[in-house]
Length: 164
Image: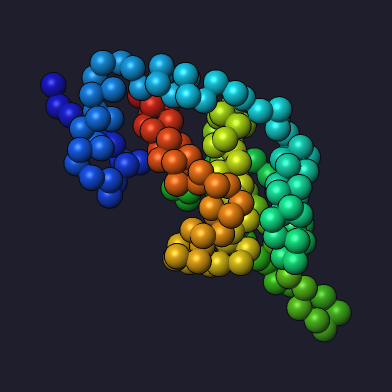
């Protein structure tokens, strides 16, 4: 039997990948995640998602520009190989440029554990200040969600489990 593909865990050290493979081969990855992240969330639709992300923005990024739209996107993971996007759309409005900021979050987060939704929202909000995935970006992610890096790793485990 060949080793399972771990496409969401590229870049992690071999000893970590070996532990993940052992959980998968013992059919215990789902159990591990279920025990650690049993809490779901009530953010079921786009309106609730907008309110959820807006509240995070108001708490951690008060001076950031306003959000025009926050939605669940069912095509996001498949089409863009991304779990969320932050875009700024500039439009000419009466001779002036108006910027509209949107956050799209993959639909997989509608049914994911609550901490994973928090992590992806923190990630996309951090892009409002930092475009690149650099040291300042990850510091901002940790400011918004203190256990960001652990949540990101566990989210990768969750996606690995979902791909089955």
